[in-house]
Image 1 (cartoon, rainbow, N blue to C red):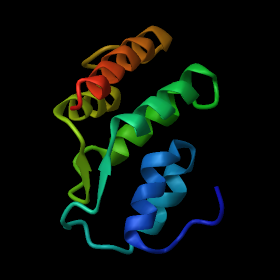
Image 2: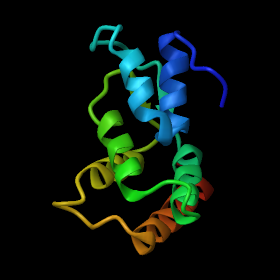
Image 3: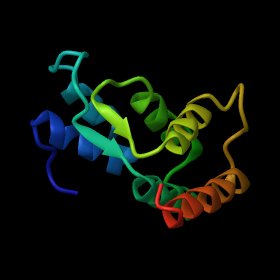
Image 4: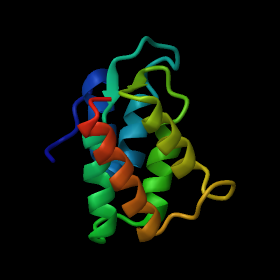
Length: 120
């Protein structure tokens, strides 16, 4: 991924696609007000790519948890489905949900692929 853009929508898109760059992207997003209409949408395909990166060892559990914490509750990020809202909540709070591991990731991959096939 090339240099990060300063446009809010582009930064949010980068946030959804690049969990390893979350701290850098969040610093740039601080210049924008917290309140906003939805500018981008988290989609099942975004999450499937990130889960594949986690399973392949390109991302670790702390990186994807921090990524989810950074997305949860943002007004400027929408969700393609309620299933994705549940995913982000579960990922952002493993201490009260399921610990993050490869079995957990594989279960979510199955659920999200089914959601994609069902047209959700």
